[in-house]
Length: 212
Image (cartoon, rainbow, N blue to C red; front, side, top):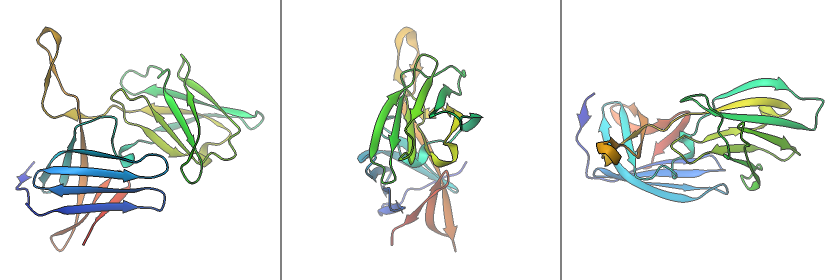
């Protein structure tokens, strides 16, 4: 991996799909991330490095990460057309254990929160009265990436949602018994270029265009 020098000029990369607005603001080796929507609005910050193909962001807080970093690891278990509810089971990919007491946020088409549910001891939650549900967010706030997905393809189906661990790095923190561990999220974005000029960065399927 070739690490390139950081430009002193400010760069801004923006995303806007009408429901969510977000941007990365880069200057020197530091960045700010801003996200705005009815679902959540917040600011985060950290440091970054640039390679020939990627921007690598070192966030300072794990609970305030871009929506575009969320995952959609979902399996359909069965259909429930004859019942007035369906079920979501949440596990983590580290050991496939059920994720209990996890927040399951149900949102409408404007991303307003309809209800917040919690999984039980088996990692399960029942979804009832699903007519107005457009989006679901699942988060455990313990070093796993959020899952955010459109609910329509999974209505009347029992599904399994897998939470993936956050990649951690940054400066190690001293722990008990001489152990050191990492607590800062690392997020990698691909760089898109045209005629040797950076025009955008991508994170999962989301594109952040460079502001002119």
